[in-house]
Length: 95
Length: 479
Image 1: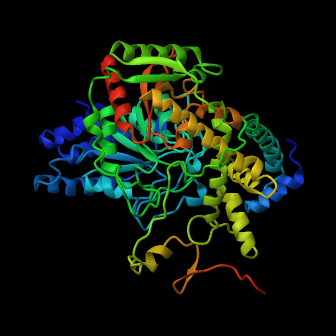
Image 2 (image 1 turned 30 degrees about the horizontal axis):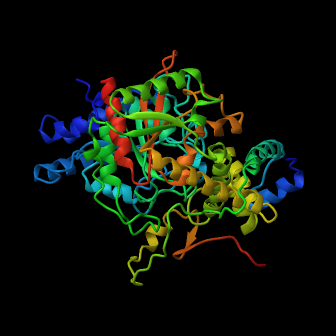
Image 3 (image 1 turned 180 degrees about the horizontal axis):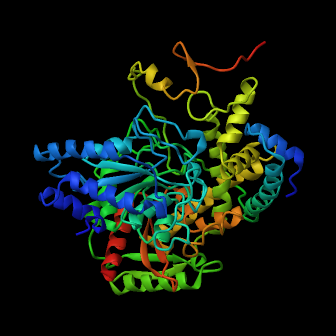
């Protein structure tokens, strides 16, 4: 499959990545051959087969809505690159 | 005597019989790691102080009469660095998590500690468990202790290499497409990927959630069974955990395979398989036959399409799971940015390695509109057919036998240049993850260069006891 520059740009945008021109070239080549390989699945007739996401028959799991979490704001914030007044700090999103 | 060469169970026994203190066991392990790990790079973090203070605590409780029925109490264990350890750095071998300290404990770690285990360190791996060589780690390559010119396999390469190099009595790994079994095969140790849902994934950093499963790596089958006894069982914190208990895997350590029906998929012995590996696998099958099992070849349906289906599904789930790394709540954040979108993009672009980026892009592509049906939906249908193939096989056979990997460990950097080639290292292992089945890799010989060969035994769902029994019986023929 021929992967164009615009496909790479589109996929990178979806994945929230910015690629250098070198990375783009490499990605174009690799993605093309990997997707070709993935397309070999088309040799297999899957007409009438239901797509299966879970191997086991699954049921929803219900429980009483009981609060079990403690107030551990400090612990949750300890890894934040930037924080302020007990909150995660992010750059301004509106002018 | 160098106790680090002993099995985990033997060390546990020595501790019980007061021939060895927990501190002595921990110190011996630390000394071994410090004296030689520079050659292998099995560990990302060594928990020296924590382990020594834990040892004193465990010793006290042992002397107070606790853990009488816990065979691994006091025995140091190594943990793959994608399993969260409260208060201890968990990096996933990625720059993006290089400074992450989890505020909570993975369920498996809680269970190990409750059984008296001492965590000795966090082991190296492929970044976010994506790879088959442990060469994509931000913290450098791990080398195969059997021959340092070769890779240890991946992605649990650090855990397998640590056990092989006597730098861990046993270790935990995670297996998404073969990441416990394949490095176990390459390093000449034993590893089990349990049935999906058997071991809680709570606290395992997610790569592909429908395929990921934690499991043990040990020097022999008995150690693996003992570790699996500890970590298995229902956990309400993992919605995919199966409500089942009393696994008692150690009870399956019986040297008897009489009447066991073993099938070898013809496709597992065909093109792409190294000749020396084939000879070794068939010889191992003969040994089991001599012990009373029946062995025959059969055709496993749809199996040729397991790898493409696996990489579509794994990449799709990875692209979704890894969207949480955005530089806001934890981990690395870029320094230069303007606005929120830039924080996300720059952080991710600088924080992830190439293999992770590649899989996230493939994932985004196969899930994108216009391609979803052709790739993702198709892969889920192929998965259904592979499951049907296994279901049919298990009507006739108790276990399925084959190689763990198509060759012995490749040379360092040989696979990295060609991602497709690296993906093919998982050819015999991925179908087990797609179908949620349990499987074990057990050493069955060496090639002419002296590199280990692994045999894989696959069981039906919750058929761990069958594969443990067969692997244990096979191990006895070598003893």
